[in-house]
Length: 220
View (cartoon, rainbow, N blue to C red):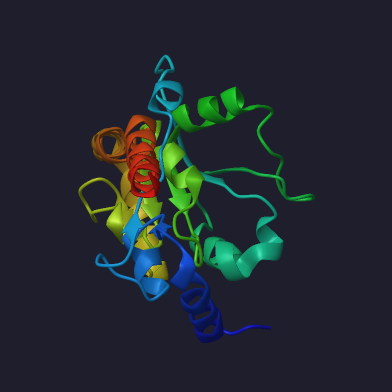
């Protein structure tokens, strides 16, 4: 198994001949030993037209999580953390985890699941940012999440979601939102605004086109 320092060293050696280095977040750029002087980053893009295009109805007062193969990916997805912090809570879980949960029938079904759930709970431990977290935010879910990797670049605690790495705090945040519908709606709206303003698909495409145009211009 290659350790992290070896991977970073090999990346630095191999990247000496590339024209442009671009990462998916400021966190990832730093993790690979780069900075704003020698690399850029372009954050994820979410199809706001799709995820936000749903006729709103009463949300079920449940705590939703969406993870594939969750029990077998504790090291990165926080299965044991979820088990410890979700006891005695009204839960809804989707994802392909045989014997535990089933995936949504379609992407449209997944959108419906988000829009019909009041709270989305993310327990990822080793992922820049799970796409499902950003999808849930686009759908107006109030989110409770671990504060790992690039998530602190997206969530401002208490403003557009709740964020912590403390088990007791995470559970308290979930209970707070389940008990306060007005707060859940408010944080869900702020989460949706965050995705629309900062992580839209249009912005993602525009930034990548700028990178391609710069490279093409440099080669002419």
